[in-house]
Amino acid sequence: MAMAGLSLGWYVLFAGQLGRQTPSSRWVAEVRAIKLARAESLAGQRKLVLVSGSNALFGLDSGRLERAWGLPVVNGAVNAGLLLPYVLESSKALIGPGDVVLMPLEYPMFGNAEALNSIVIDYVLARDPAYWSGLPWRERLRFLADVEPLRLWKGWRNPPDRSVGQGVYGGHHVDVRGDQTHSAAADRTDQERAELAATRPWRYGRDNPPDPTAWRRLVAYRNWLQQRGACLILLPPTLLFDVSYRTDPVEHRFYASLPVQARAQGLVYVGNPYDFMYPRDWYFNTDYHLTAEGRARHTGRVISLLGPDLGRWCGWQGTTARP
Image 1: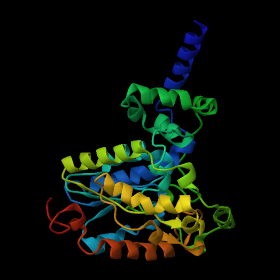
Image 2: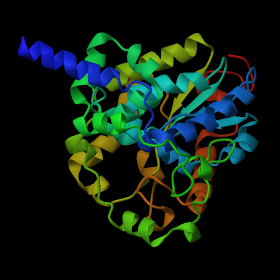
Image 3: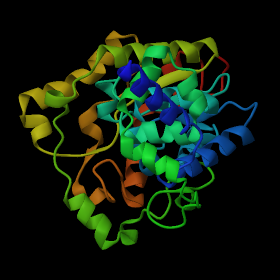
Image 4: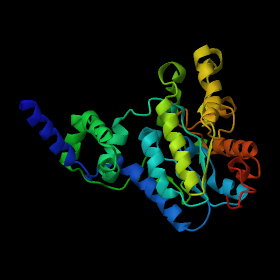
């Protein structure tokens, strides 16, 4: 009886957070609003939509992609901390019939696809309670189980929800297409240089190998796109190179096998992860965030990789042809 009362009390505390906005979720909300506005401005037009975490926010020049492929671009990339299920589901609001979705997913998104973290819990509670309400009951229960008491306390305090006007992240540093701005090497502060210097090699092969659930979600997402005449192209994200990614057998197997695993699922995966691993001086403040100069070089490589006819990866006759 006591346990039932505690459970009911926890649910009441949780439910009271739905739609209660927090400062910590504000920057993501502002950035997503820019991207949604861009997609709405292109209603009825075929377009290219970038879907990933922040490696594409920092790493791809949407204007240059437009000129290369003749399609308007929405850079829908925000934050890998929102995790694969939410990144996929929330991107659907950006996508229309016949669109091309270019998806350079960060490597952790391929592993442990059912996990939650404080970032996605905070954002969904504060900014997208409809997403939580639409989940299967087991997934809703996971939010209830994983939310931290500190997050509930912060929400109940109801702090001011002021616009973000400083720092690296937020709508003040995103352009109309959804690309990060103010990210040139000369824009780096001592703090950002220190953050980059503190990065250490990942051990995705050992700690976060690809998860069958992630592949199932990606296949379902591809099928959803195809039902709307749209197309999915996966490619590697940019990542700061470390020699262990080649020399450690477990890590090498992770990167070398990922494209093979994707193609075995019937997904279109273009490129070799090692081709998009770059030296430290290409990066801004993390091992996934390129400087503006690095973005220019990386965008050129992506265009060269995919070629002038983007539609051929979708089985279409030309980028602008109807599927």
